[in-house]
Image: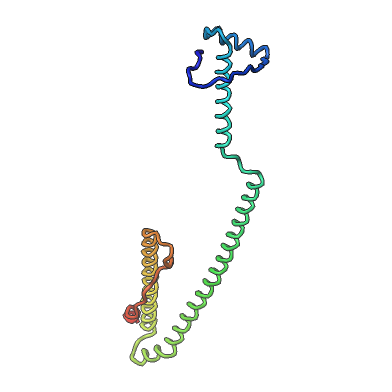
Amino acid sequence: MGARSTKRSLVKRITSLNLYVDQEVQIKALMEASGSQKEAPLVRQLVDEALSARRRKSVQRTEAEPPPPAQDISQTLQTIQTLLLRMICQGQTSFRIQSVSLELIQEALVEARSGKVSLWELLLTPAFKEKGRSTAEIAELFDEQSAAAKGFAYGLAEDIKKELDAAELDSANNGSDNEDRQGTFVYDQSETDDVM
């Protein structure tokens, strides 16, 4: 090890340094290996290296992010558990609402079908019979009108789905979350008049 050539000032006081035996042996071995005759420059270099190592160690310790306390982790897990339970409750509530909605829609369809059959039997069937239509022809007319109404309903639902999908895609492309997520549907009265 060679002596460092720097423009550092030396303190002109004598410091008493008592070394351990193993330290003295290692310093003498270093002096022999470097060919140094004086131990003071070597000791100064070793002190520099030790201080540099300690500075690096303290910087690394402050830069390393301390692990979160165990209490924070348990609190975070508790928060996640609470949120998951709320989501499950909301999902169950949503399922119950959808079940009730489905039952109401089924009831409305039953009532609509029942009303249509009653109107046919009370008003249209006698009129068709007077015109000479058979019971089979009247039933066929009823089925045709039901199929046309069913086709209209499915077509309308498909149009609504396409518009909602397009609105959602447009919203995703524009990145705007402020728009109505369900989109808008323009109801055209002429479409229903064509089927009736």
